[in-house]
Length: 340
Ligand code: AMP
Ligand code: MG
Image 1 (cartoon, rainbow, N blue to C red):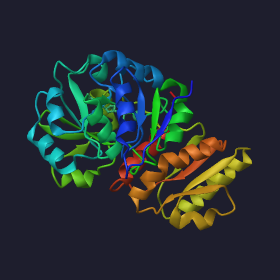
Image 2 (image 1 turned 120 degrees about the horizontal axis):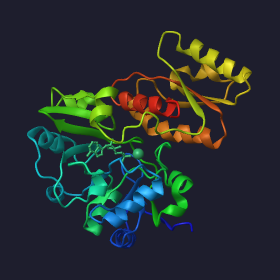
Image 3 (image 1 turned 180 degrees about the vertical axis):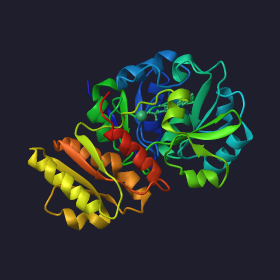
């Protein structure tokens, strides 16, 4: 059965609609809702039965832990035992916002949320609809992205319906998400502060608060962080990345021509400044190559558009891995990784 779609205007929130959604959360329901990063699929984080429905709906492996969303700092303390000084500083600077902190969990957090780990990932979203929903439900909300596992994350309510329609109890449509890709995940281990996943807050921004912070390599991740799958965020078409160089346009054109000759339907995802070179082909602009924010906000949208249009191969120009461009390239590389 198709779930009800509640349109909520973030500039004029109807508290009655929020109450309706909160009522579902309090009764083991699954509610998809907008955050500033991507749409989340929410359930009461303290109810293992509700949380297990998230894994079923997304077909998410049971070893991939969830992020718990809170609306106020005081709600943090029923979830975590201790907050290291670096975490405190990051919270003060970046909460509410797209930053997730992995901290020692309390006994109260159900094992299914953390997939049995002794840490829990927590974030305070800045999106006003998300915050009002958490406040009205009066419980922390566990919410991964509201897509089928492995697919590009949803940045509109329509994307949620396309992937999960029948499996959720309600979808809140609050318009397109602002950032367009997931939060940055930071952990504190052995006296170090490390980034497990680049995201909406850049490495440079984090460094302005915690100097020594660095990004875990894939092998460090494989060893220490669960839920890290090489292939992720993938549309049905194959994604081929053309790296940055002085000849990026020529290289892109050559991949495109070869693919078309091979009989494939090709779509190009390009930097704005290169678009005029691709006029004769099916192409979409991601954004200016030095504007990671714009590129991030459009990435999943463009991947899904090509998917819907039945393209076989998406030829994607790589961007600079600076600022939020690092997160854009992380997602793009995972989208391009071969199926296991
Ligand atoms: P998603 O909910 O899809 O945005 O993904 C959340 C990601 O956060 C997971 O896939 C993990 O990589 C990471 N994560 C969540 N909880 C933990 C944890 N306790 N320890 C380490 N990483 C975590
Ligand atoms: Mg996800």
